[in-house]
Length: 342
Figure 1 (cartoon, rainbow, N blue to C red):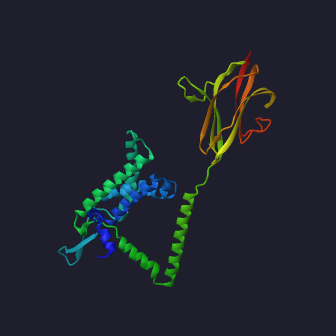
Figure 2: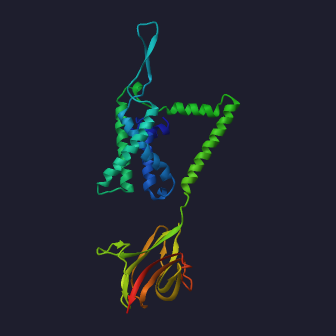
Figure 3: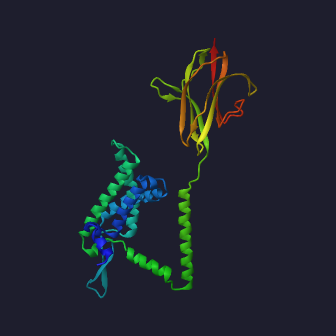
């Protein structure tokens, strides 16, 4: 007995008897769990490639296999119907390959959201690890039930995927073409498939970056301490401070250094034109944010200039601010109109 056969005998007998298609499903579930949860692999496109069939096909396929272990509608032995001819008796139990594939997609699309909904009412919630464990566990249980039901049938009645016949037919068609034309068409087909797979892999590995921008806003705290975009202070007293919260969200697709400059300005508005008559520098912040990171800073605004309808303006710059910060040279700006009394 060869060493390869000896190694195969070490595999538990139930696994050795597992039908080929169900073994492939179980293997894909394990590979998907590894690609989603193991850090060195979880950040690669393999996670997406395996994750799509894991959610959209495998649960339904295993469930359908558990429901229909029989081979589908294959012609049975002929029998005499009492006339001159003979008729074929067709099996009506089970379903064929096309129906299995269609039901597999449909049931997966139905089962996966239901499992997610059930998780939402548990302490685990809808997170990566619980989702992988739940969908993977459901699929493996369905595989076990399908294997038990299929192996309980006579060998001639069991559903099986003809991997061997497909492989032999593909090998013959690709490497033993009947004509020169078939050989050329085979080469074109292989090249087309390689190009298609390469294009999909490149698209997954290098997704197109969206628009680059930064959010800039002012907030206040309500009675519960939550941040809200309302009830801004409009009336100040000179020398007496009131709290405000300034925030920046980085969506520039790269780490970015920011500078936030706060000024109180006396302005004149005429003919849709705003002229700054006097500036009173107030505060300055220099946050550094990673991509998709948000920064907020609670601070106290203490005016040193009095007057009505003054403009409390916040200017945002990517990098350092210029020597003369204005709304014209700022990357973003936001402001409030306030009154300051003595």
